[in-house]
Image (tube, rainbow, N blue to C red; front, side, top):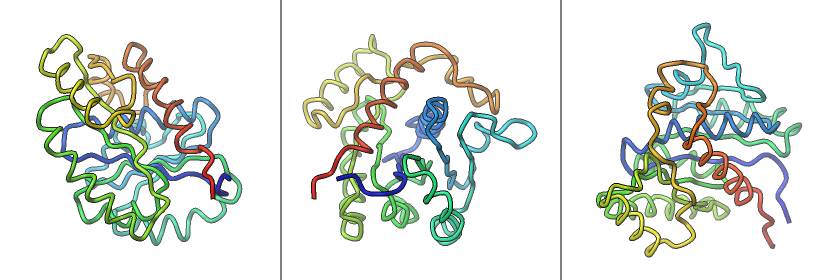
Length: 229
């Protein structure tokens, strides 16, 4: 059966430069556009998600999306335990989407212990194949306190299908991790790279958005899927 209350989705990475914040913002934008109450929780020290989602007045205009920023140290006590009580009660189908620290950062563990699912953002390159296990190890430790935590999938960003090295790395990832490799990979698109330069703007049209649309549906299904108990 489904557990009551909104789902907490942690977007993490095993290294920098994987497009994690853009992916978190894209999913928040799309879920909100579909009428799903969504909180984008920005706990990164640089506040990258806030810089992307807020306009010049410091307000997020995306429909049904609330942007909340806390430091990793404050996120649990102030946000989950205090601020969210009423919102959780009235938004059972909502999503709390965390743009969090790298999985290998000790600051990520308390948030993982409050999450239902994790999306690991990756690039299709040889380094990813070597470093994914470190992220998986962090999830293993978090599950000791949060058995319901699940790795929902590996999201491949900035993919260039005509790049032979990326194509081969993507194939190897599929061989190694099977259905955990989410389809489709998000293609590299110039407009996505420029999105942070237009704070508070809509998710750009194009092939990357089309991929995120499909991924958002897939991830939502995995996040809210029926759990037999």
